[in-house]
Image (cartoon, rainbow, N blue to C red; front, side, top):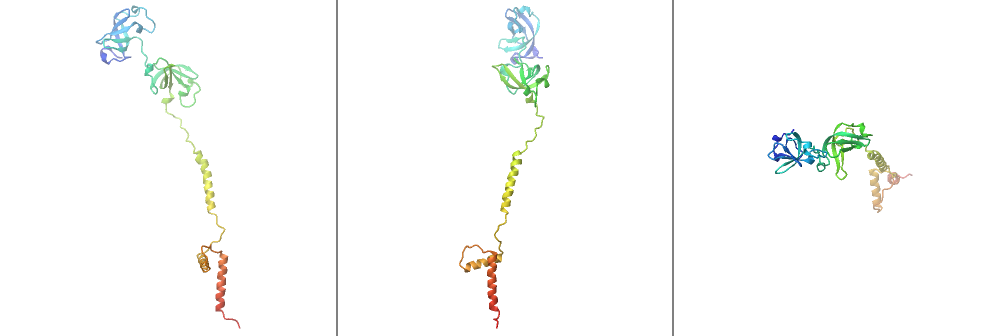
Length: 256
């Protein structure tokens, strides 16, 4: 707890908690000794959340009080006995982390008091990873929770919180199967195989040996043909047979 003697006035900030003693009461409020070089001033409207008609009805000279710094000025420190909010509307921002207590449960979510003017709402979808039917399945009234601020609507005075945003996803997602590759890949492979098989089909035209091709080219040249496709094996064989018979007839003696 902060003590008056340990905090110089120049270091005091709004919401600083102090212990003080009532020096004097007036119609407008009271002067409070907070151990500073400048007096502490407590206005009548800051004595209690309920209306105070007379300061003397609540405060007496010499009374020990707990106060908070409201504002620091050069000649005085303005005080309040009303505990300030932990978070003003202007201080609330998305992504900040707050701690609070569950004050109310509804089927659609849980309300958490974390020191703001209004409690924050944690929707059922933000209570935990996975499906949550009702808020009571995850939290109960009085639970201390830590949550992340998702959104602040100052106009509507609404604050949206999330517990899930601070939790790591423990449920491992199954790796997505490469369905497109798995399905289309097979069809594509089959098509490629078919194309490959088509290229491997054997031609119906006869294949020629090197000797047959050379012989055919010689015959084509002798006949004055150019760029003519080689004849079939059968035609080449006939020409060879004719040449062989002609040579044989010249060498054999004539009969008589």
